[in-house]
Amino acid sequence: MRKIFAVLYLLATACSTAIAQSYDVKEHYTKKDVYITMRDGVKLFTSIYTPKDASATNKYPIMMQRTCYSVAPYGESKYPGQLGPSKYMMQEGYIFVYQDVRGRWKSEGTWTNMTPVIDNKKKKTDVDEGSDTYDTIDWLIKNLPGNNGRVGQWGISYPGFYTAAGILSNHPALKASSPQAPISDFFFDDFHHNGAFLESYFFTFPVFGVQKKDTTAVPWYNSQMINPHTKDGYQFLLDMGPLKNADKYYSDNFYWQETVNHPSYDDFWQQRGLPKHYGKTKTAVMTVGGWFDAEDLTGPLAIYKAIEQKNPEGYNTIVMGPFGHGRWSRETGHTMHSNIYFGDSIATFYQKNIEQKFFNHFLKGNGDKNSGLPEAYMFNTGKNEWRTFDKWPSPAAEHVKFYLNSDGKLAAAQPATTGSTSYVSDPLKPVPYTEDLPTTVGFSPHNYMSEDQRFAGRRTDVLVFQTDVLTDDVTLGGEIMAHLKVASTATDADFFVKLIDVYPADEPNNPYMPNKSITLGGYQQMVRSEVMPARFRNSFEKPEALIAGQKTDVNFRVQDVLHTFKKGHRIMIQVQSTAFPLFARNPQTFLDNPYKANDSDYIKATETIFNDSYFDVEVLK
Picture (cartoon, rainbow, N blue to C red):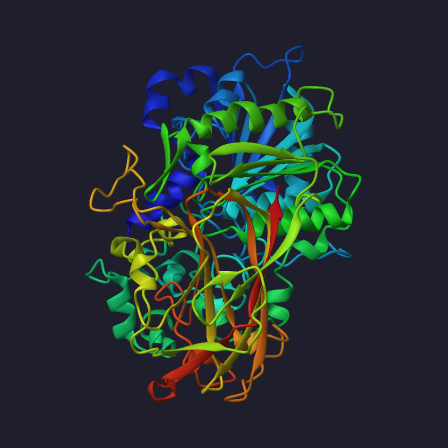
């Protein structure tokens, strides 16, 4: 599991061997390491890279990233292979600033996951990521020679959260912020989906739940890393049994204990959510995400929509590309996700024509709202093309309902007669969420977001509903709401739904498929998915048991989509109750705290889906 640190380091530095060979950072930049004192006296370690030609007459804007994943390499004589969000911005010239957030690596202070926001700060000890961002910017503007008085901030994943939280600093010098794959709320992002625990994150807890004893340049959490001695995370975690058995690994891991002891959306989680705090946003914002981001798809959409709702007159835009987690930060040539090919050099297009244009306009240009970029730059993952919108979701979208007929049809018309379909869910033999076994013991899930779902649809504990072969293209563009009408023989259940693009039988393989044993003929590409614990159907704060045998509404949002289902394809929806070990198994016995379930609490249950269940989707003409 030591490779986890290597992944984090890659995310933090975005280094590239090819770039390092073609551009010598040390030749063009001067590095300085400093400690910047926050208002409560805590000192944060900060590395500053200034263009060598910066002067009183040749000033540069500041680009800042704050991270919990290390600003390595440490030492003023050591330089990374790349600076900034892209090589294009590095070569053009900015003052790049990287900071270890409080409690991490070489910074002082105590580490807190998703630092709670304090809206009304009354004393110097009232600190959060907004205040730390403000204090850092203030010091940089006043103490860095050769800066032009404008600051931009960016970051991917957790650094994306720090960027999103930094918006709340409202420092007048912060002119442009780009939260990329940001976490918005840990009850709906990363570690949970609608409160369902992502057991696929089990191996990451040492990174987030161990306090360091002193400032350090080396990972201090390695001793708690689990070596499963297998690449089969499904079997390892199934053999571990109920989640309470994880205490043998994480009894002193503070974040694991916080997670276990807060199974519902209580104050602990609520105070860590960002969207409700965007009352007045002064900086220009460009939120970036990937349609196939298995870690943080919720975050970009939630943050963009929250800022848009509360600041309709501000500069607020969104970009969603055909990427996995953070993959727009490095060019791979052929843009792939799992077995799906989306085109060439898409990351380069984004970096040069969207990202660089955004920061240049607000940090080097006149900084007005006429940036030349649209409100929404969205990639259609079915047609493999960018589309632009003046508003997202588009007001031109038409709401359409797809009903889950008991004969397996997915139809636009509500069935004339009542019907239902049932399956038996056994948490002791859960449906696997992927056939890509090595990813089940990694830092986070990945390929399943566009993976072939035939392996699941052929099981008896997965329901399949599909349209006839499409005679015209159908473009889903916007929000999706699942309206399930269910009954269970148990008192609790999860419902995992998948929107799938079914390829025709004669679909040719693309030339870049990594898995040569897969055929795209008949491929069932997952386009979107989401889970909903029935316990939270009425409230995430106050879970309720199901009444066995009673028909019940379970309504929930499935994340936005822009995907054209082409003529000759089919639209499919699958419904199941387990997707292991992506999501922890619901015991199917209602408990106040499912993390403390016993073996005897895990029971089989028959789940019934009635044919007046439907998906409300938005269709673009």
